[in-house]
Image: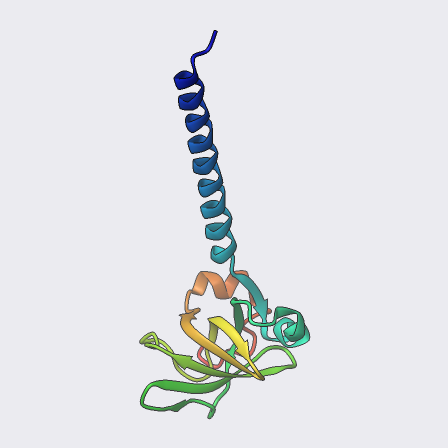
Length: 142
């Protein structure tokens, strides 16, 4: 026969185990949900802007010549895909290799018609250029 104290102790162990499993599951779900960043070309992003909403994603395009305007706390510029252009406002440091006419990948989200970025990745590798000539065909710095 199980004593009342043993039954209470066992019940507490089951409840504590359940709480731990739920907490771990929640942290795993939250962590994986926020770490997923989708990748879109400028053309794909423009086409699916409504469905993207305020989700963070990465967008790829070529920085248009004459479009870079540096301000005190941010830089405005325009990227172009095959047919569509996207206005960008970037807050944060730009990489040293950032300049007009180069392909970039930006991380951020749409706010209205402008893509708000907080991270710029510059594509500068010859290996990438050789492997993806269709993506960098308009790159002026070859």
